[in-house]
Length: 191
Image 1 (cartoon, helix red, strand yellow):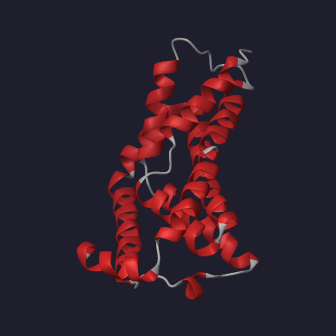
Image 2 (cartoon, rainbow, N blue to C red):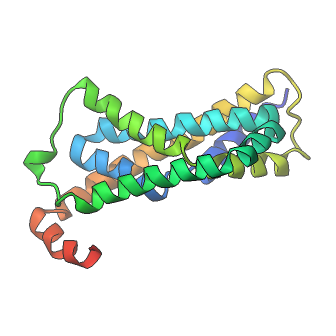
Image 3 (cartoon, rainbow, N blue to C red):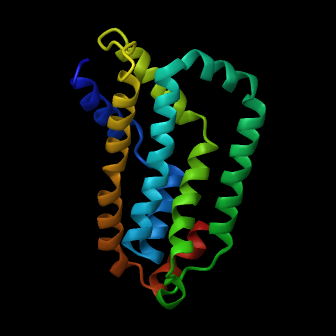
């Protein structure tokens, strides 16, 4: 077995699985409103889906592609509906005040994880990107060994999870700039 497979997975996970778009916004929002741990758990939710998609892609991208093609209208419809609902919720909600943001408790931390997990799961684009990257790597990487797919999955998981400290530290650094009066000034511009 090629030990560089793990490091190739870390590279793929870091560069292909960056929590961008709605998932990134959810991660940053959890970090700002609910604390660093909630932000890290939100990134963890996205990283788990990235790892699952990598495992599916490594074990059989053709099966996954056939399933995605067969269920494309349903998957796209469900994913679009979830993203629309998240967007409407964030758009309609007034800027959060620091006192209203603080949530404590295990159930809210699980909610941070679950929110990004479900949004990532409803988006078929990551599995296609990971599948394409694995297809490109297939010339230089042999995925037929029994432990190759889990090793690659572990690398993708770690690479994707490396975004947690970056997002949490970045959101924490911006938090002092996001005072309610500044958010009120920006709010009319984005509506």
